[in-house]
Length: 177
Image 1 (cartoon, rainbow, N blue to C red):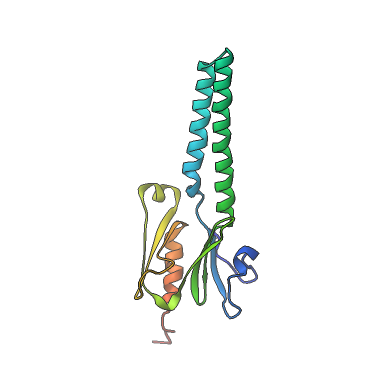
Image 2: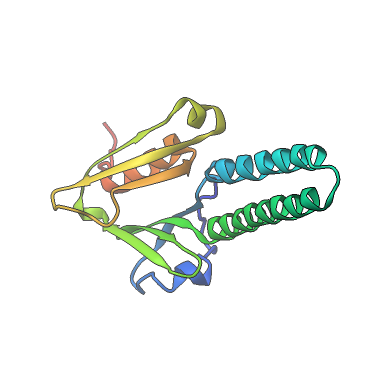
């Protein structure tokens, strides 16, 4: 997890969506666990392609089948590289005024919810999420159909949850009691 400190700024792919009066408070990439499925698909495809290569060992018909099998695996590999590239530009940002989730490599999507509109916020973690260190934020507001209602694969959700709750519900400055 990377909480933004003073002097840090969002990448230009995110910074262009911030308003001049906003102060960036938190900026994190989604957890790399979002890539587990594409990794499993590439590795599974590699195993299947290897086994089929052994099965279709020789002959012209077997050679054609092997070319098709390896081309299909190459497509899986390209899809994996695409998913990694998408992950590298996806950010969850909390500013002094709102929460943003920027996603997409070619078609850029920016989902946003003003902090003042958040009426309830919770997070949940699956067993795998607890083991790997990610969770999901669930945001609710008084309005209907908000652009940002869930944020999946958030790293260190407890820490981020407390940070965001502190912004949503700032405590009073306790004086000397």
